[in-house]
Every structure is written in structure tokens, then in C-alpha cells.
Length: 140
Image 1 (tube, one colour):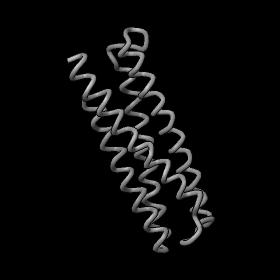
Image 2 (tube, rainbow, N blue to C red):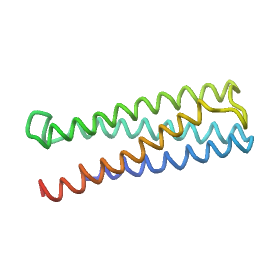
Image 3 (cartoon, one colour):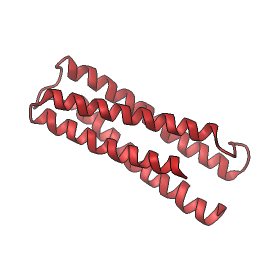
Image 4 (cartoon, rainbow, N blue to C red):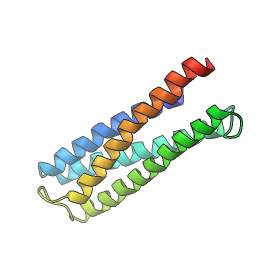
């Protein structure tokens, strides 16, 4: 029960750090923007590592039950989106480091941020459905 909660905190925190990074870029503070974007990338990578740890330590697998199938399908699909979002942020990090973005023009980074926030919000629904509602109503 702790890993999904930790992952939720990681993603919510990453939403905050990417927002601070974006605000810093818009304010012209490139170093702060880079620092907070780096923190966001680390949080995304930690989410993925914790998710993998949960998979390897799960007491069920994808072929055990309908719950197992749905669990691995939904969390795996979300995990792939986290990997894609993390990759987009890594590309944005190196572009920002190369000063490809200005205070006014940074559409590639902004789209990466929108995607990241989308992944964050979807995780909240996944967490509520898979770990709270289903676990409480179906399994527990």
C-alpha cells in the first residue's frame, strides 16, 4: 500500500516542480528553471523505479485474475506514458541547457509540461480506481 501512495506523492510533487521550472524560465531565471526541471526528471524516474518494484514484488500476475489483467494493463499503460513524458522532459532539459528556449518562446517545453500534467492527473484517477476503490470494494 505504501508504494502507490509514494508514487502519488512523487507525481504530485513533480507537477509542482515542473511548474516552478516553467515559471522560472518565464521570469528569465534559466538556472532555477534547469534545477527544477532536473528534479522533475528525477521524480519521474523514481516513479518508474517504484512501479517496477511493485510489479516484481506483487503477489499476483497478469494471468491470475481479471483484477491482475486490469491492474497490469492500466498501470503499465500509464507507466509507458510516464516514460514518454520523462523522455520529453529530458529533451527539454538539454534544449533549455543549450538555450533553445527564451522567456517568450518555449513551445516545445510548454507542450511537454502539458503532457506531464495530463499524466499526473490520469495517475490520480488510476490511484483512486485501482488502489482505493477496487481494492476496497472488490478485494478487501
